[in-house]
Structures are given as C-alpha cells and as structure tokens.
Length: 398
Image (tube, rainbow, N blue to C red; front, side, top):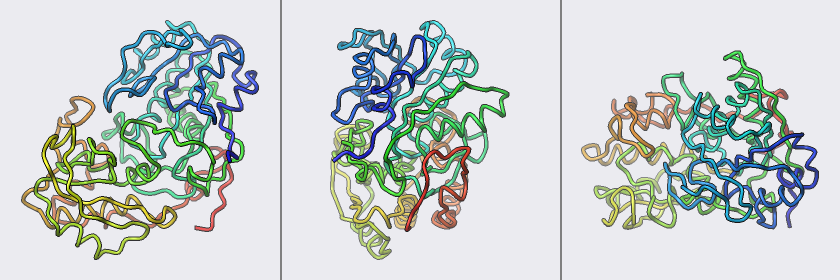
C-alpha cells in the first residue's frame, strides 16, 4: 500500500503549486505517479502549461547507457519538444532555457542518494542557470531511497575535484532529498557566487526518513539501466568507486555494483571477505562474463555482495573493505585507471579522485595503507544539516 505522496503527485492534484507561466519539465522515466503514469502526462492532463521537456543523462526514456543521451526531438505521447541538457552547463544551459521561452523550470527525477549519481548535478546546474536567468525553479520532491538518517563517506575536498559526479561538497551517501539538496545548493553554493534563485519545493507527504524506499510503498522504477533493484542502489553507494579501477563493477551483468570481478581475481577474495564478517552483507564467489564494458565477452572471477540487512549494512565501509582485500591479494595486477580513462568522456584527472572527492583514497592505497582507515565515525544527517536545509524530521533508532 502506498502511504507516501510524492511532490509530483501533490502538484498534479493542485497545479497552482507550480506557479504561473510556461513550464519546462526537467524529467525522465523515473518521473512517475504511484500508478506509474508519467509525471509529464499527469501534469498535462491536469492542465499545467508544460511546453517543453528537458532530458538528462540516459535520456527522457532511459534507453541508453551511462554517458549517453537520446536523440528524439519530440515526445511520442504529448508531442512536446524534447531538449537534452546532459553535460550542458553555464552559458550553454542558460541559452537552452532562455530559448525555450519558459518562465519556470520544474525538476522531477528520482535521485539515488549518492554523490556520484548524476541526476543531482543536473539539478545543480539547472538551479544555477535559473538563478542567472531569473527563472522560477520548482522541485517535485521524492524520497531518498537509502533513507535520510545516516551520512557515509567523504565529501568533496575542494574545487580541484569538482566534476559531473560531484559539483559540491556533500557526503558520498548524502542522506538528503532532491528538494533538500536544492535548498542546500541555493543557500551555500549559489550564495557564494552572489546568486539568488526563486526556489520552491513541493514536499513529499508521508515519508519517514528512517525508512528506505521499500517503506514508502511506492513502486521501484530503476533510475538508470544499471540500477535494477534497491539493493543495487545500496551497494552502488559503496562499490561505485570501482568504476575508477581495473575491476569490473558488474556493468554488463544483471546485478551491476553487487557483482565485482577481474581476470586476475581467484577464490581467495571471497574467503578473505567472509573472514571480515562485515555487518549486513554476505559474499559469494562468482564467475561472470560481462556483455559490455570492462572485460566484455571474457569470463572473470570475483564476488557478489548479498545485502542481508540494510539497516546495519554500511556500503561505503564495505566498498573500501573489498578494495583493500583486492589491493592486498593482487598488488601486481590491481590498478586505478590512469588520468583520462573514464566513462563519460576525456578528463585529465584520475576517475577515482573524482568519485572519492579527493586524491586521498588513491594515494593511500598506492602507498600500501588501508583504505578503510580513511573513514571516521558515521554521522547523522542532523549532525551536519539544520532546518535551513532539512524539510523532513529525522527520527531514528539507529
């Protein structure tokens, strides 16, 4: 039974929440109602003056892989024009919004709760552009799938490590909703640039931040082609760092980010990880042949993470434990990808540094130091953020 009403559902019931004037809807396939009708269709049916659809990474329909977007010019259902925004920022994005003739940008996408998941940086860039161009900005809020109580992992060390997998200083597992992030970005990042934005958040009704996504009663719509389940999302918040290594993060399998492996890995890895007795997770030795991406078509060996208790599972600590075990067992074969080798285009920085938010992880492992030693205590969201950011009360028995 659905007990959580998303911001999109609230807006479709009362389009006055969107304000006046022409609307550009920045959305994708995760922008749905509880019955899985698209938000775009629901808003148009309710009489909202939506005149253009803006698409992010993976495209409006989600048919393409990471680092790609779609080529369709019009939406087949609404016949609205589609304008892609992926990797557009600054003056280029300003021109896209101004040329569209809208007065309000409405954002509706399901974030994953992880700093290096790119939808929130589409939000960041669009919010900053709205501030520069004087457009109204509305976030149709959605729950954080990983819950909104705990923070894990590092933030962004400084601007030298800013990228489309991290524009701003938030934790790897950030614990906030898209609406709360927008409030944080507006109050902190935009203010530092001397910018203000007419920001409005249509809040989620009936969400308990102590719950993960299953507690909402909402249907899980995979937020990208490689995020099939909620357990995948939990694992990704820790194992996404393997995108910056020569270990397959399981792209090209049916359980990406839960499955890790490489040609040089043998049975010792699963045994070593089981010895660690990490909370909320079990490890199974696996063989797999990715259909694309790293080691495509070759059989590799590794482990699958089985999340057994999401409440005690600490994905970032687990990801570092796996990284430490691989670096210790296979020091001659394991490596971080060199500068310029990454998924979403050329960049002369190490991918791992951008994912971690600093060079600290890479330099520690390359120096033979345990990566797990980089983590301190696990803070709560309320230890870091106050009512100027938080929209939903945090109460937890964790």
